[in-house]
Image (cartoon, rainbow, N blue to C red; front, side):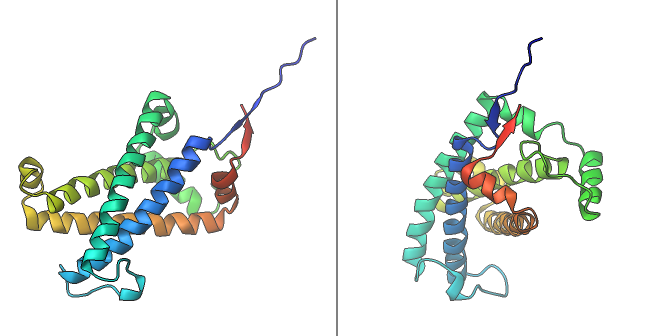
Length: 205
């Protein structure tokens, strides 16, 4: 009688871990340099402490911001292409529904959401990751309008003009920062997810 054995497979393959950490670096640089750029011409009645901003002055912050912009755009595009072509986007992030998200969120709040299989995303994770993909896309589009408003008139008009694009960019940044904060809390609650994203974790498939 023959016995088949499943071969272990990394729950987070090398390409995923690499693009994840490059995205994390790009987001950190863009957000902190963006705060310094914001301080030069605040939209709202507050500014960010200079101690948590990057760049030292407006010109330096702009240089950091543009450098991280190219990293985020290129690396994010690579991440998206691999996810689509490999079928991972469909397998890991769908299906997702409001009912499913609320169900899993309620389970998580009661501490009844399992994390044994790190290769499986619950619907709260699926929604969060899909949201952050769209949010970063909106950040890129609004950023292009702020950077090259004349060269991208269609994007500028779609966002309601240059001033509206500033608000869109700031709100999208705030939502991204909120996602990162919640993500870090979840990592603290389930530390093995951090280890898996650093070295990978073998799952039998």
